Structures are given as structure tokens and as C-alpha cells.
Length: 228
Length: 388
Image (cartoon, rainbow over all chains, first blue to last red; front, side, top):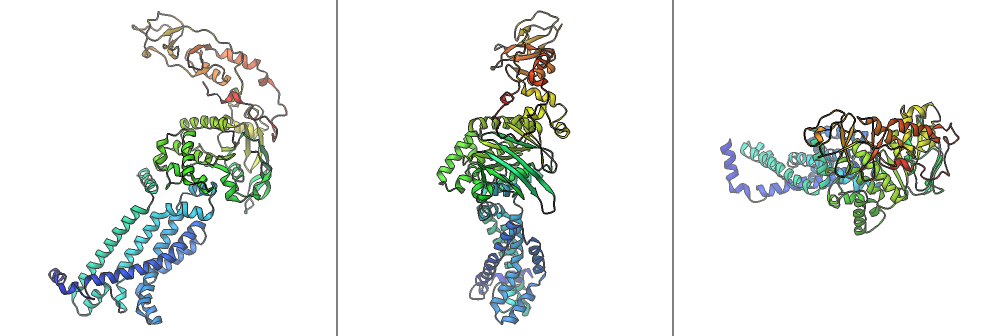
């Protein structure tokens, strides 16, 4: 099995052309990026609004849980049948998957800002939007990005459904491999998917380090030290 | 700027009354302390000045203008606001925090930062703290930054909601002294909220004692409230030792100072059967040499009994009595402004002065329960000197 997988990986034919690994990885990343972008546009504003006003939190959490319970493959199939188009069906399925963690992270991050800090922000004369952008968003960033990382991991793992409706991506190796009982190809596809998830998560961790304000990181350190 | 509460009431939707018909005036340039047990509406009353809470009845006036007529954000930028846990913005540096209000008011970044730098100095923080983040500061330093942030746009009014209650007692006392000093220099109109009656009488030009349910029980000078509580609630709230605390407002006047036998550190004292005060080269008291004690060679600190509190000449009788009571020799050491020994006082001398003091025997006059619109700003200056 291991030898067969290594042989598959060593075969130059698997590394070039439209079915080659680089092309499949790019396709896979493309689905993830598109779904992530759409999910961000939907989830972040809603999360910010609910966190900032404190209104609709119960609805948000409840809706998030319901959506989480939907099987992605089922959603993709449904939309494929409704639209008869592969790409929208796959992307909608992935967006549905990515929205809940981002929305929950954003809402929780804003909602967890120290109430004294929120009180001070209003008390020194910030208007609602000034308080949101100058105080709540910078302090909420670690949890917002935590939600995004969560979503990306799930997207990478699940983007294989694109292959299910006839598209590309690393899911092709799983589908095609299973169809012709070429298990080496299946294992290779799984390995690449896992590796891609790890790499993207590391990139996001780096992004988190650069965009989260230094003072917020110091405050987190101080809190965790105090708790220890 | 004068702050006036006119029949101010806050009733919550569930019918609970937080503030009930509060009427009082905080004169321009003075400090009023709202004090009372939890649930007395003191914080709610304070927050109605900058519209963080809206009253359900009555009005709050700043120099005669109803705060309701102002835009809330604009109003708040013109009122300094300091809260219990400082509420500093963790993602901004100390300078960034202090510069918040000037930046909101449209100052240029450069002038806001320059102003913030000046304020670090005003609140007694070193300039190098300016680039630190709140998480890197002690509690006392955070509170100072909170005060600096409130002062940044030079507002005429300061609201302070239990600003010092989360710091330890030693730091708190230092912060209180600095606030009094700031107030003397800047002449702000301040409303200060605390549950601590000691803090209230120490800081306030006037003290407003509130009772549960948001009713004003008494409004007057600290000396008034301690000496002439209007009812049992106030008497109980200001505490059992209010008579003793009231000494803070009696000046020592003609307090008799006696000479005392001294022994210099480093000298070779003769044996004696009376208490001798050990002094150093600057005549500062170091402790007491007990009667009948023998010194092996030259007098050193190890031969001494620790002294009591020191009484600085010219300050209130409270310090004088405490010095006498805390001294192992029953002699309170009197020092001058440089800390050099002047002499000693006995508790008997202090009591003589108290009994002769006209204020202490005045029967309840009509001064206690009033809304005090036209009182002079600071009748209790003697309470302001640090206690010896």
C-alpha cells in the first residue's frame, strides 16, 4: 500500500497537465477561496451587528446550530438538482458550511469585549460605529480569525464534494481512485488534502500574528498567566 | 461649570426606583462625592450627567443647560469620565488611550499625541510609559492613565465612578492625594462616586449621602455630615467612630507642645528612668529609648522601641490624638514640615483643646440638610493636609 502510494507520487504523469497535482491543488484552493470570500461577506457583518447591539444573539446561535446539522453533500446534491449547474451547487454547499463558524467567532469576539471597555468607549464620546471599528473589532480580531481558521479547515476537508458534481480539485483523486479501485490514488488525494489544510492553517496563523494588535496579544497573555 | 440635579428620577421598566427626586447643586470648581450603600443609585445619578443613563423624570443642568438638549457623543467628549477598572483600550498604547478624546474631537494626530504626553506628566507617570500597553501597567498606573484620558480635552467637568476602589489601600491613598492636588491646580467641577465614607470625607468639598432606593439623605460638607448627621441612617452609615473622624476638621489651634528628653543616634546616652526620643542628625525622630534600658556603647536603631505615628505641626487634631495614642511613651511626637522634632503632645492636651473648641460643642444648627447652592467652595481645607 505504502509502496504503491509512493509509486503514484513518483510518477511524473501525475504531476503535470490538467489532472496533475499542481492543477488539482489550485482548483481546490480556488473553491475554498471563493466559498470563504462569500461566507465572509455574509457572516462577518451579521456577527458584528449582533455582537455590537446584543440583539438577535439567540437567533444567531440557534440558526448556526441548525445549519451546522445540514449534511454538506445533501446541500450540494439539492442545489445541483435545482440549478443543474455544478459550480454554484458546490460553492453554495461550501458557503453553508463556512458561515456558522465565522459568524459565531465574530459574534463571540465582539460580545466578549470587556464591558468596562465598551462603557469607557461610549463614555468618552464614541458614536456606535466609532466604538465598533475603533474598539470592538480590534479587540475581537483573535476570535474572528479563530472562526475563519475553523471555517478554512472545514472547507479544505469538504471541498472534495466539488468532484462529486463533476468538478476538479483534490476530490477528483478520491472519486476517480475509488471508481477504479486505485487505492494509491485515493491515499495520495487524502494526503494532499490534509497537507493543504495544514499549510493554509499555518498561513492564517501567521496572518493572525500580524494583524492582531500587540496590546490585545499582551492582554491575552496577561489573562492566561493570571488564570494559570 | 455648575452641575444641577433638579428633581431627577430614574425608574426602570420593572418599576424599581434607582434614583428618587434627586435635587442638588455641585458648584463650579468643587468636588461633590456621592456616597452610600450599594443600590443607593449613586452610580446611576453620576451617569445621568453624561447621558449614559437617561432620567425618567426631572433634569440635569450643566451651567443651566439641560444635558438632554446636547448630542450625547458631543456632550460626553466635553465631560471627563473615569471608571472603576479604568476601562483602558487594550489595543492602544498609553499615549493612544490618552489621545482618544482629542482625536475624536478632530485634533490632528500630532497635537493629540503631544497633549497626551503632557498629561502623562500631569498625572505623575514617566514619559517612557507612553509607548506601553495597558496590560503592561500596574492597577494604579492604569487608573492614572484613566484620569489622564479623562483630562485630555481639558473638560470643565469630571465624572469619577469608584475610580480607586480596585487598587490596594496604599496606592489608593496616593491616588487620592494626587486627585486633590490636581483639583487644586485645575479647578474642575467633579462628581465622584464611592461606597467608602472615609474616601468621601477625605476628597469631597461636599458629600451627598444616598440611601437605598435612590433618595438623598444628606448633602453638606464632610464636617457637617460627620458632626450633624440628619438621621439614624446617616449616623450609622458614617460609622461609629465618626466623632474621632470628625477631628480631621478641627485645627490644632493652641495645642500645647511640650519639650521632650532626646538622645541622639550614635551618642552614648546616660541611664535614665524616663522615655527618651531618639533623633538623628537632622533631629528626625527614629524611635524611643525605654526607661531603664541600657545601651551597649553608642545608641543604635536596635536599641529602640518603634515610635507611633507622627503629628505634623499645624494639621488637624485627629493626627495629634493619633500620635499620642500610638506612641509607646504616650507622648505624640510633633514634627515640622521638614520632619524635624518640635516636641511632644499628650492625649490630655489634645482633649483639652477639643473641649475648648467651639465647633465641637455647637448644637445641631440648621446647616446640615441643605442642597447647598451657595456654599463657599472649600470650607475644609485643613482636612487636605497629609496626616502626620
